[in-house]
Amino acid sequence: DLRARNIPVQRTALSSNGHSHPVYSLALVGSQNAHNIVSVSNDGRLCVWSMGMLQQPHKTLDLKKEKKDISGHCITFPEGETNIFFVGSEEGAIHKSQIHGSKASQGMETISETYEGHFGPVTSLHCHPTTEGHQVYESNNLMLSSSFDWTVKLWNTKEVSKPILSFDSYDDYVYDVQWSPVHPSVFATSDGDGYVDIWDLNKDIESSRIRHRTGERAVNKLRWSTDGRQLALGDSNGGLSIWNVDKDFYTTKSEDWSKLDRLMDHSSRGLSG
Image 1 (tube, rainbow, N blue to C red):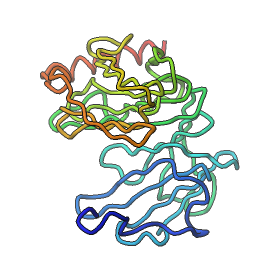
Image 2 (spheres, rainbow, N blue to C red):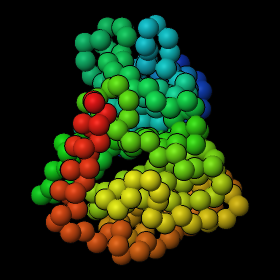
Image 3 (cartoon, rainbow, N blue to C red):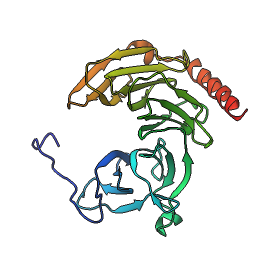
Image 4 (cartoon, rainbow, N blue to C red):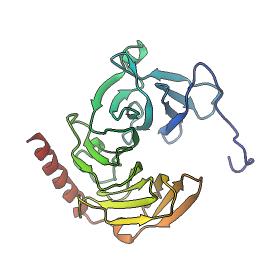
């Protein structure tokens, strides 16, 4: 809380109920008035924390597939979802699971689906955001992933065979990928060579529309402003920078949604064929 002082007002404690290895990813889920923090770690555990009490998680879930622990590197929830989630693993697979359910409560295998396509640790996942008044190809089923295998992939989460599209133009680890919050076909990526790329699927699926090198350091994290006009970038030296985005990437037309719909339908039919 920046209004209080320059040290944390709350922090988690080391306990047998929490994580025993580094936390790689956090997600904030819940309603407008009640939020929980969900964390994953390469210790194979997911923890759900109350915002008001971080001494110990109020729920834990051991991520298992075929009796083996899943080393989680990143997590994402479909927009508006508080139960079903996707976790990217150190082994390169993406897994679907749920926090609440009979299998979870009985301590049994907790993975319901597995998506295989990456050949290195999955560094980031992002489900397509819904936009009021528009529905794109059942947009909640679209998900982007990035990986240490130098690729970004687009998935239809109802199809577990292989990704719809693969973007292979990178020359280093891809650390983060994020959909634009306002434009349905736009997303941004960041990599280990300091580059940020902005893609527009409606314009080109072979190469990014903008490729900009921010410096010598890896760009580990990026986030869009809520209006899609700026990108916040975090680098490997702890630096934070804010970049303005060209208006073409946040100005939308009504046909942008239908164009993406047709592209995804064509790509999926090609996949099934």
